[in-house]
Structure formats: structure tokens, C-alpha cells
Length: 517
Image 1 (tube, helix red, strand yellow):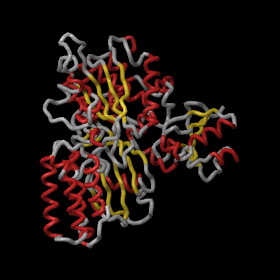
Image 2: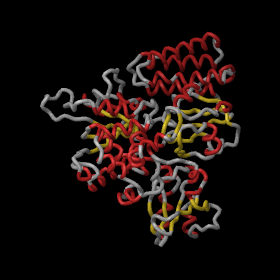
Image 3: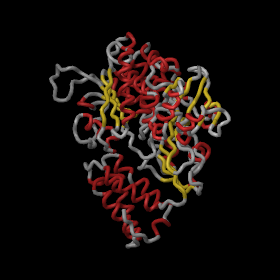
Image 4: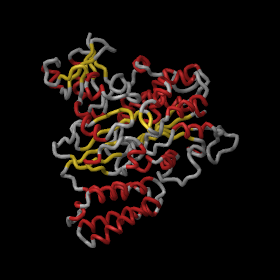
């Protein structure tokens, strides 16, 4: 009997995937709700296989009406053929996303059948020190944007003695924590959400490996409230993992005892910064802490804490399963392994691309993304989220890796790639960046709290044609103060999009326009 696969990913559901699944079930078909393959312009992408784990063919942009009228067939204009052979997928190198879009996210047997737990089993056969060394040797760096080597962070936590919570008696229980920051707030990014909805056991397995490596006993996933489907899926996965013996006491009959809880954030962008997240987890307003002490030494409740983002932790199971050397063989220079790039904005083929570091921005935009959705000429690409710099269309041959992008005046950030065609006004985009900082600043430091407000006012004066030369110089000075004086990246990186727009698209600042905001 044929098996039909219909995505349960939030993006597919928003396009009618639930109705498609219901229509198939009404016809008596066997339906599996998988994650999304990441080709979002095709959603709902419906696949069929002759057996559960067999090769699949697919149909794009399916509707419930099409199912009611006649089951999809290979004569349909929506037929795409063998899904795994589609160029968009065949050219990728999926380590983090190896199961996303293939398995039922909440079926533990499906997870194991597709390689799940191999990394954890290998890790449990090693000492914690050896696991830390493997992560170090792999070259894995933080995928949240800063790019700090994960192995060094883990080593620091592993070397600490577990501590009681701050303010407790020295005789109280001592802890170390694994905290995953899933507060994915950058515009144009959705990789964390898709991983948690499409392969939540992978994230839990990575956290458990990290716990074994550093001696942690508790874990938290800090998940944004705007992701209700991810919250529900991950919570269900935690319950199932406990039933399977993958979380809790004596995991897989080992001495490891580790459990995970979800904490839902309240919508603060700045909680993507690790210390603001800790403040929120501890029940306070999400405001950035001064460092030192580092969270690896004195983190959650004053205890040693590993803080990584979703894609960093989700990289770990495959590294332990396939080997650190194989992972380190991917990428280039100091950017090793794979990155999950997210193509968004005015783009013909938006979605997920996981490939080794070193691919150029142009390849992502043109070969995978297919250029602008509007069909108009591409004018600018913002890489790295709302605090990332803009690159003009003639500067896209830069390699997508940490140091190369920094040298080009940009940053890789969380891997977001957002396109703008030639109708965009870059002065408006610069104003948006400053106004975003006004709205999202935690308010703790003056350069960010006040500087962003003055930045919006100054850009408005420039756009209105008031003392343009003097105000442009003032704006540059203000950006310099914010860059060097802000406590965290919120204020420190806001000048990136502003200055890149000002430097590369000065003509958009020259025409007097009354900015209404």
C-alpha cells in the first residue's frame, strides 16, 4: 500500500497542508506527517512512496480540492518526480537537516531507523573529555552568529566544579546546565523553527551528548512564544524521549541522568543574547549582563552553563555519528562543517539550503534562490539578520564564511539571506534598522538606548534635506559610538546596516523625502 507524506511544518500548514492530509485520509490513504523539505515555494509538497522507507515522488503546491477530484498522478502539472533527485536538494550537504522532511518528527522508531541515537551511543562509549575533544577537533563554531568555537566553550564548562544555585546553602544540590537559545528573532530566519518542528529528537540528542561531555544534569530550551507549533512539537518529543529512556535517569542504561524543560520567552529580541536569556530564564526582565563572569563559569542561577543555539547543538549528533574528521573536511579556512542558509525576502525560491561553508552569496541567491520573485533586478542582499550589512548586487561573489564576510564588511549571523529588488529605498532600510533598535533595546546601556533614538531622528533630517552634510557626519559619529560603546551586539551591530546603506547607496539619502516613519 502506498504511503503519503504531507508536511506538518508551520509554513506548509499555513498553505493548506492540514486540509490536504485530511483529504487523503478521507480517501483511505495512509498518511505520514513529516517535516518540510525546505523548498518553501513548493508547499504543500506532497510525496508518495510504495513503502514507508522507499523512494518518493512528489507534487508541489497541492490543494485539498485536487485530492478530492483525483489523486495526484505523474501527468499532473504539479508533478516534480523523484524528490531526492531535485537539483535544489541534490546539491546540498545535509548534516543537521539529514532527517528533516523525511521522518515523522514524533516517531521514535522512524528517528532510529534514519540514524538517530548513533551519535549519543558513540558518545556514551567515550569519556566526557573525549567527546569535548571530538567537538573541538570538528571545528564546530556557534551558529547563533558569534561563531565562537563550541569545543572551547564546552571545555570551559567541563573544567568547572558543579555549583548550588546562587544564594543557596553550600550543601544544596550542585548543578551544571545545558541551555539552548531558540529565541530565533532575526527577520528572514526560520532554520531553528523548522528543525524543532521537523526533527526535535535531534536537538534533544545533541543536548544529551553535551550533558555527558561537560557533566550537566539539567537542560533548558528557551523558545520564543511566536513559535506555538515548535513549542508543542518539542514538548511532545520530550515526553516521548522520557518514555524511550532517552531522557531522565540512566539514559540508555548508562550512568547519565539528564532531563530537559522548555521555557517560553515573552517576545524580546534582545533575549537572543545569551546573558539576557539567562535573566529571563531566572524570572527577571531580559536585560544584558556585563561580562565577566562568563556564563560558562557562572551562568544560569550562578552555575556553570553551556549556552548554544539550536543549530550548534543539532550539529553534534552527526559529528559524533560520522566523525569529527569528516565534519572538519567540509568548509574552508576557519569555517568548517555546514551552515543552514535561509533564503527569504523578494526571492523566487525561498527556503532552506544546508551546504558546506564557502559557497558564494551569488550561488545562493541565483542558483538556489532563482533571483527575485518580482522578476525585477536585484539591488541589495542583507545577510545575517536585521543587524547584518547590505551587499549590493555586484558584491555577491564573497564566500559565505565567517572571516570572508567580515572582510567584506558583513557578517554571517544566523545564516539569513534576504533579497531586495530595485524598488527598495535603502535610506528607508537604514531608518528601519535604527527604529528596530529603538523598539528592541533592553535599555541598559546609553549608546543603544539613546543612540538609536537619535539615529532615527538624524536619518529623518537627512532624508528631509536638512543640513545633509553635517547630519551625515553626525550619523557616522553616532554609529561609531554605538559600535564601540554598547554593552552587547544589539547596539553594537545596529550601525552595520545603516553604514552599509549609507556607503553603498548614497543616492537614496540625497533626495529630500519627508520620512513619516
